[in-house]
Image 1 (spheres, rainbow, N blue to C red):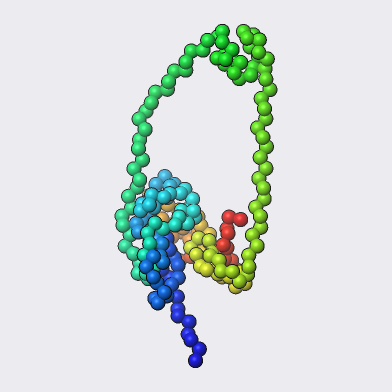
Image 2 (image 1 turned 45 degrees about the horizontal axis):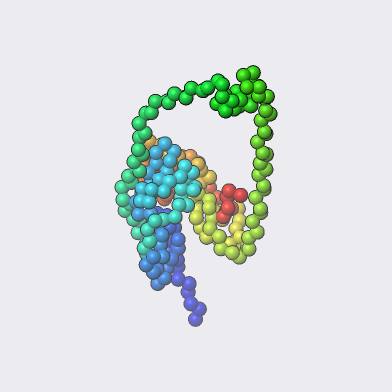
Length: 215
């Protein structure tokens, strides 16, 4: 008799999203965030580990700071508290020190390379900044049987390139919108108040899985 494959469960902890089975769920196999995020002025921050990013995709890729067992129960997130930002007291501008016109070293025209009748210096041509050439990224060669993780927003599924097709992925084309304590997706015009509700908004588009959307 053929052995039936044990169905895999998806972990519900924020920051994990891995699949597991009940008989293979050791302590420490799950890496997650145990408190919710904080959003302010375009900045996204995990209040549990104080790690932050302006980019939402990079924010979701910040690894969890806690370890434990996988679970199928939605966790109750601790209340997010922002990192206090120290306010710098206003400091009045300091007056520039008086220059000695008889000193070539302190003469502003000499220092900038202009002609100076006082010190007889000649204008010096400014060196052009070195040109920088951006090299084209190397094309990644992928084994069609190699398991990859889709990086499309709202997906996160593991796939093989041989099984990838134009409707394999369910995702949000985005962008994610955060405004006035609301979180949502502009692509499907759904907005909620809680972060776990935001993460549970069903994807609204289909397409190809993509393990490297930046390339």
